[in-house]
Image (cartoon, rainbow, N blue to C red; front, side):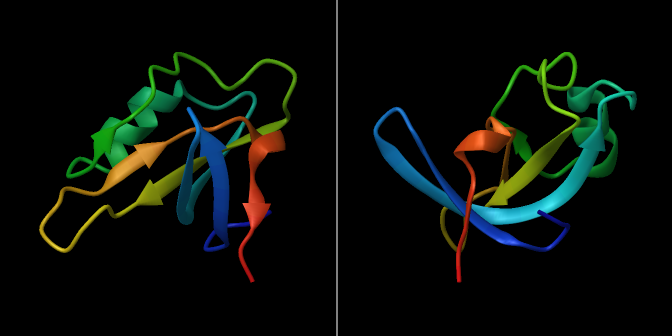
Length: 85
């Protein structure tokens, strides 16, 4: 998957859809620091202190819940993501 791809996944029985806005390599900075630095107007919906163990890449997904809502950033397990066509 790559930057800009539209994806969906299920979490807690709810399907979520969003756009990949950042690809994080395993050796990069801590994900929540990247989120705070690069996406200061987003609500962070994860507590990731590091990339997910066992994955070479993880993704920050932007979800916009409504026209007036603050955008949200998620970091789901990559194996749960499915491309939206």
